[in-house]
Length: 228
Image (tube, rainbow, N blue to C red; front, side, top):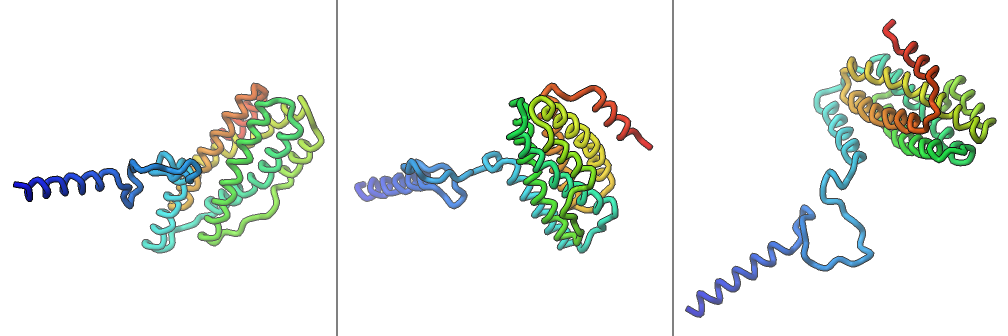
């Protein structure tokens, strides 16, 4: 009888240890955690959108490797070039907003530009390398002129110029992203266009939140994106 009790006690103890000790997948642990221990995410939700994007891009690259080269059309190449050039002028514009804007909403929009296009720029350079697409190191002459105009403005003048020029450019590229995603046969371009779509949508919304976008800007975008 004593042997049975001892065996049962040992089993209970083993189960308790199994429940409370952290397993290889990082599941719950009842042990103490040091106050300065680094946080380790345990789920896709904790990892955030960047984790999802990285996973999707890895899957796309592996899929291409497994199935062989996928077509990269001129439209695909032009799209990657446009994303790269957008970052080359919108990142400087976002930086200018932090020092030349008088509106806190404009400064906030500038921070969104800095964050979004810094990430997109890294992604586009990686995708271009994988797909063998040459990317420019300079923005277009028109984009460079926009940056110059912003450099020469400040305060309320800067705020209104920033909101309208950037909302117009984002509205036009937003329509282009949809066309690229609808037609491309390349998995990397599909995933890149999805990421670009989310980023550009966020930027349009924070620019609209400034309350400074004129009706003429929306009319200009509407005219530009009408079916030819």
